[in-house]
Length: 486
Image 1 (tube, one colour):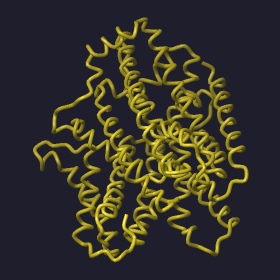
Image 2 (spheres, helix red, strand yellow; image 1 turned 120 degrees about the vertical axis):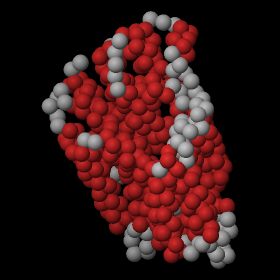
Image 3 (cartoon, helix red, strand yellow; image 1 turned 180 degrees about the vertical axis):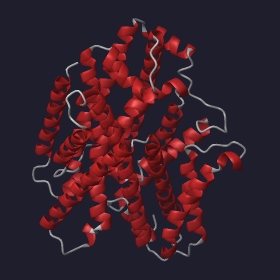
Image 4 (cartoon, helix red, strand yellow; image 1 turned 60 degrees about the horizontal axis):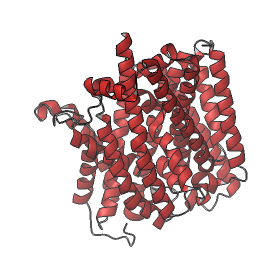
């Protein structure tokens, strides 16, 4: 297909996003950027969060992994579902009760300044690494299938995409992202459904035959019962629940849009309805993965897991489907990057620069500083993407995801200690605990096969990390001296 056509479609897509940003960011101020003036509609936030939660990595990797792991990923999804109810009925009431713009201010109120700074710092580290990795992986796909043919180098592709993201997020922030994420979720789901029907048409089978073939090929197995393996169902279900609690409920990016909803009741409706829809959407991704593997097997094609979806769409489906696929891929990428850069800007301004406690800053100063911070994060994203490309080592990508996962453990421990206990912490031990807990987990994970008779840690490592943080805080704690107790 003429890559110029695809590029033209992408340009039009970007222009639509910028148009939305123009209308949603008029008369925007810092409060609009950080919290959407608490006027977001719950159903728009719920729908847009689908795109934010699924990202470009999910769009490509989950279908590709069905060949080796069946539907074991759905065990995690069921855990996610449980976790969303904890977020809705434990964490959201806390955030609304104290009218938080940055959720990490709870740690300041409850545990003190050191806990607040370390919590916000771990979020900034985790979200930066995670968002950049997702950005890098998707840009690689776009470069391979679109921009190489146009003679556009990787560095320019990256600059163009980051420029577009900055253009529609710089002024409006959350107020804009609620609407752009909704549009992008529509395109992502449209691409998913269109690809499913296109593959079904090319297979020439009815849905019953496709399902029977997937079952006979063991592509639909959900449950894993080997307790030593990483995908053991209890590890996945409980790990998935805690992944949601931490990476949604304790994550400023995900919560920033939730607490922009008008009131707690609507925010809870948003969370519950979103969690139900996500069960179905993940089912569709796994169903698509099974179809892709059947289609490839039927025709004798062999692809690496992450290459399977884009390669089949480009080489073996009608050319128009590839345009829809690229739009869907971009739509899966953008919500996980635009929300990240907005949340990072918010957290840095509020938690690190102290916007809400500084009386020397008027609105004009805040806007100027916020824009500088926003652009600085965009530049940091660019530099990290260039670094990953220069190293060209997938082990680095895996390591970044591992590091990002470890950094949520201290957050889980800090929030749990504040919510469950009525004790105070000794602020001087917070840095030691927040460094020691991930380090202990890394050592245990590295030597687990030898130490624990072949046992491999999976998603439960996050729980262990949070538990170690909690225990260390508890044994060094003192009688509560704060009037605020969550």
